[in-house]
Image 1: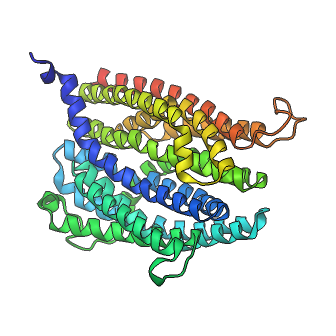
Image 2: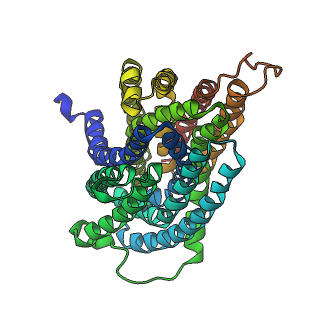
Image 3: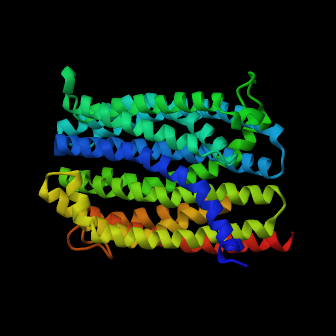
Length: 459
């Protein structure tokens, strides 16, 4: 038998064919954030710090929304694997009701969260940019929630190209709008970091409308098209969606808050620390899209196998995905370490900010293996429709270890046990992230091994 006909090669190829359009789309989406931070960084260090603080709240909210709404992915995948196509439209309609509810709630929470900047010791320009960034971008949250439901539905029926194309168009639009609004070209006012917020708002609404337009015209969605008729909210379906999605949302919040809260906790050390942290976080968010995309594709592959009652196939697919992500992690870690100075200098003209960001990227390179492993294994476990146990593990890893250790090493007084003589600021928090991510990765690998073996044994 030729090597390229083996089950391993077939699964790698199938997983990659599903994952690569997701990857391009995710990279284009995060590229919007990279553009925001880069443009703000070239406006001024204060604009960069303000956008960074605003993004710290924005990221926590949108990633929590992504988790809450991810429940649609395994449910649709199971229906598709079991050839129950007629059940998909009703499920997606109810998921859109859920998206409307959580999107409006997120809009309210974002505006309330922005009041924290008034309580912080910040430079006036930094506070103004951060507050306005959150207020403006909150208007995009209902659209973002609806988009993520349609994203999950499309991915789970093996249609990933639309999100790629839409995200690439949105990324190009964001680049243009940032150029116009941040620096005030073509007669428009120069809004600085606040221009990034308006660009984000417009681009997210564009993504939702463009994806709807694509789906309505494509024959691939006709058999499962969810918007053919109106349907009122259905309590039992919504409760099922929330039961499955709430633990994922808490999981995403636990992880992203461990990263995003750093900007708030180190704000007292000045704009240089906040800006350097923002650069390192922004770039690692960019590289994180690779294992995340692979994980989303793996969730679909595992879910479809289980829907077809193929537990052995689901286990095989899960471990192939884990193996692929370790290769990705190796490349990411090496590239990040070798190119750390060039990466930092691409974001800012400030030599102090660039030097500190390069140091943080060394710590980021160290946790690539654990970060990539934990995201892919957690997605594989969600393919089994298990979400509560991973949530508890993530809460332990990030809130039980990363944040307390980060506070201890980053900003605690020297008289506390294990605290350094001088707070390490951002570096202390990033060292603690390595600890939390390692705990999460090891725990999730053991959890996946047990779950997959139990399902295979009962097949």
